[in-house]
Image (cartoon, rainbow, N blue to C red; front, side):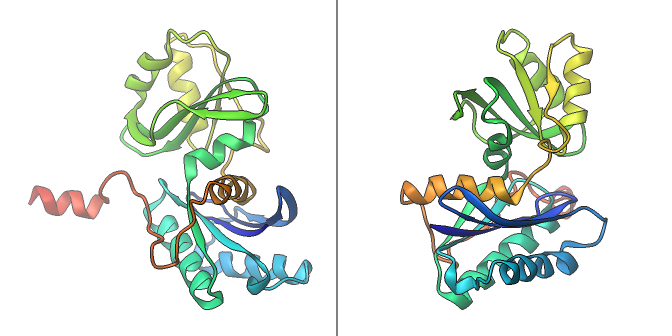
Length: 230
């Protein structure tokens, strides 16, 4: 199964093509340029260098959220467009579940963290054992204080991944909680991990049409919150 995967949930942008768990090509950029400028050139580049087209891919996958509202919209819109045009199935992957795959080989408690502002993180917890991940919590927005209280008594080794890893690490360390950040080359979100998570979902029959693909924000955008208060 060939999967074309997109990751635009945070500051960096990436795309990858995998086949049955093997990475055929990937591209990553973290230069501050907008995803609307960088995503599709990366996709075109990796497809060209592998002599593939979108038609050759079996599934279009995307990190559907949580994450940056603008980034998620760009990624989901691009995935929908590619899937529609090529008449391919699509799959929206939890950003947090995908990033947990970065460190699935490290046994312990995987703490996924994305900066959600206001002393909160988008978070999910996973148990990693022998390369297998077991989800322990749903995707959620949680305060750093509440997260620290939840994991404080857990005796498992704790490893933190995601663009909010440093923020989370500092908060937990201040509470005397032993933890560590993933290595720098594995700490951030990656389209390769999106593809691997998508492959697992596809094998479970959890595919969708391009029309069904929707972003997952977990909480309303700032503009919506301000309107609700008015």
